[in-house]
Length: 159
Ligand code: PNS
Image (cartoon, rainbow, N blue to C red; front, side, top):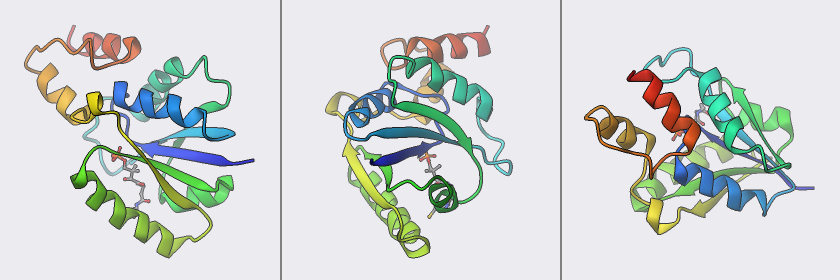
């Protein structure tokens, strides 16, 4: 029984995230999409409950996937949940450098879970929630980059 967590900010969830979740759901017995709630960083467009709801709307058809909010250190959450795998995605070498240092630090703090990576599909390799929010604020149509729920949530924000 291999349990994995896929942690992130998901502000909001985009097509690159969805693709990783769908592919990972075939690799692990249980996958939890873990949404970081950081009370000290209030620069998010969506609060953690909203981000969780958006994720839940796109995982409805995946019975072995659920979503949860976590706070504090990822390794403490991983330890408490008894997961074997922390799943991250890599778009490019920039991500690799950032993610490798985080994976090493997490390994230093907790040996009980292995960080494992999936490469983002090429068509989503330029996609990030930050970029989407930037172009959306200039009125660009992002309907081909986001799942319907995120799109509607963004439209509501700008209504
Ligand atoms: O989607 P993001 O913002 O790249 O996700 C980053 C996230 C949430 C995975 C990372 O910031 C994290 O694990 N935060 C929890 C705090 C923590 O464990 N920090 C130590 C990292 S070595």
